[in-house]
Image (cartoon, rainbow, N blue to C red; front, side, top):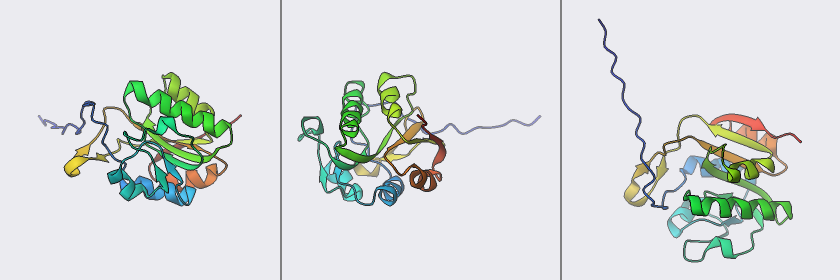
Length: 175
């Protein structure tokens, strides 16, 4: 009789710590699609060292209190009380034409109101194969309990698809 030993994936529960940063490979892909990143509305000094947004807001400067415009990268706080205001604000500024393009990294919470609203204005979505390994304080690695989606808002969905297909399945939004 052969016994199969499976190694459990390393995942952690949401600790409430919002300081988990996007892997550099995803940021590099976002820059290939967007060119420069004009704004990261949910960031920190540490994260912006990789993102290199022209302008960014932190937990102290509160991106929800400011107008958003240009090309936006966003990895919003995943706390239930924060993710919806961040994604709704992005949708608003995109619909108003103030945000010209955006790439957003979130959990693939397809059943939530905020995800449905975000995807309703998206050109394409990449459903990441596996789980993103975020980095954080003291180079700790964190993998969430559910999968992620990278959502693109803008006119270059084919470019987004060609760059982000390395991370997972791409679906186009049609109207």
